[in-house]
Length: 224
Image (cartoon, rainbow, N blue to C red; front, top):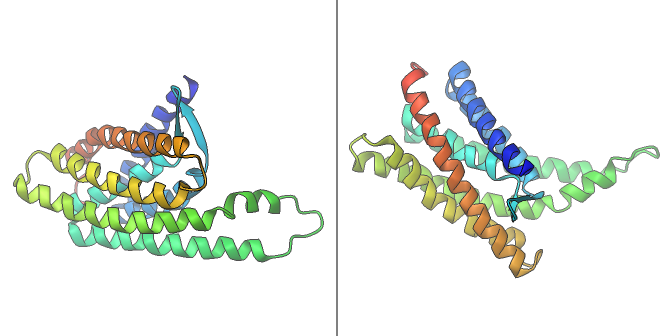
C-alpha cells in the first residue's frame, strides 16, 4: 500500500505545483511546467511500479498534469495559447532526445561510472520519445479542440464537463498510440494489456483529481 499513498501524494504535489507556477508566473509558468513534465515523464515512464496488485508506468502522473496545464491555458488564455504550449512541448521532446543521444556518443573517461546507467535509460529513450511524439501531438491537439468544443456546447458553463470530457477521450487516444509504439514487442501481451488498461485508468483518475484544482484556479487566480 506504500506505493498507492506515494502515488496520491505525488498527484497532489504535482497539481499544486502547476497551480503555484500559474499563480506566480502566469501562462509562462504553465509553459515551464509543461516542458518540465514532458522531459521527466518520458524518463519516468520506463519505470514500472505496482499499485494494489496492478502494474503501471510511473510517468502517468506528470503526463496527466500536462493535460491539466493545457486546459488551464485554454480556459484562461484561449485556444491559441494552448496550441502554442503543445507545439512547444513537441519541440522540446525532439531536442531533449537529440541531446541525450549525443551525450551517449561521447567516450567516457576511465574513471567514469555513469555511462552504463545513462545508456540503460536512454538507449530505450528514442523509442519512448518517438511514441510520445506521435501520441502527444495527436492527443494534445485533440484535447485543445475538444475543450473548446465542450466550452461552446455548454455555453461556458459546467467547467467539470469540458475538463473531463476532453481529457478522457484525449487520454484514450494518447494511451493507445503510446503503448502500441513503445511497448509492443518489448513486453509480453499480458503485461502490455495490463499496462494499457491501468495506464488509461490512472490517467482518468488524475483527470478526475485535477477537476477541483481547475475550480480553485477559476476562483482564486485572477489577472494571469
